[in-house]
Image (cartoon, rainbow, N blue to C red; front, top):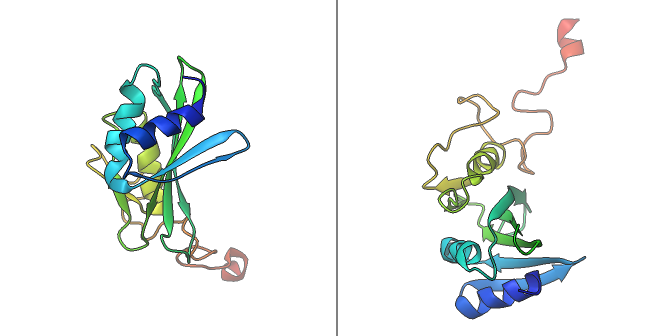
Length: 163
C-alpha cells in the first residue's frame, strides 16, 4: 500500500454504499462512514494484509451542537507494518447517539469508548463494560457536550457560599 489515500480508495471499492465522504487535510486522510458499515470496514482495514491497520490509537467524540448530525465519533488508526495513519468518522444524531463497539477488533477501544461515553454520552452498542470512567455512577449529564452548563450541574461560587 502506498499511503492512507489508497486505503480510503480500497474502502470505497469494498463498501461503495458505506462511504459518505473522503477528504485529506494536512496529509491526514479522513473517511466518513455510515454507522451500519463501521464494523465491516474496521475488520477490512485491520485484516487485509496490504492495509494492516492493526493499532487503534484513539477514539473520541466531537459535539457540533446545534448542527445535525450533532456528534461524530472519530477513530484514529495506525498500521505498524506500513507506517500509515487513517482517520475514520461516524456521524450521529443528537437524539440517542450510539455506534457499535470496536472492542472486538481493537481491544484498546475499551478505555477510549468508556471515556467517550462518560464525557460525551455516546453509547457503544455491545461494549463489554460500558460504565462511567471518571464521573460517579449517579452523575447526570456529560460535561464535554457543548450544551452542558459551564459552571457544572449545580453552579455555585465557593467564595460567596463561605461568606
